[in-house]
Length: 126
Image 1: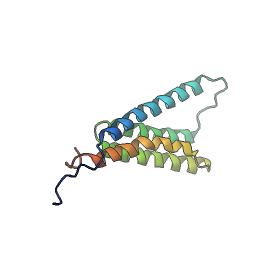
Image 2: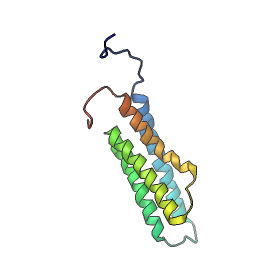
Image 3: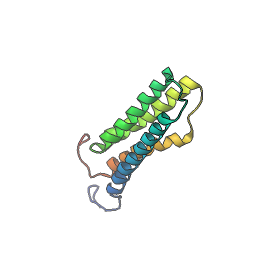
Image 4: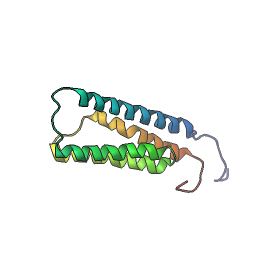
């Protein structure tokens, strides 16, 4: 067999791409519902300085979700960097590692990277 021959054994990118998109929408919606519910509860504490860093890191994650709809590679990298930034900010400001469930926010990014990886060969930024 020639190196350029297609065997057809590699998975298609569509399941990864659509699972990433759907999970990104679900995670963002769940976060939004949580934030609205938290804002409506009585006795809410004032915003502390460390919360701005956490919010900025999550904004990076959500921006990666949006970018990943068109450019899986860039979106996936932005999501992973945002999750790592979130863990770093929380650890640096509170001294506590976030719950491991927060790693779910990285799942769409990993799926975007898989979709990019299994896409037909093309230019890097297309």
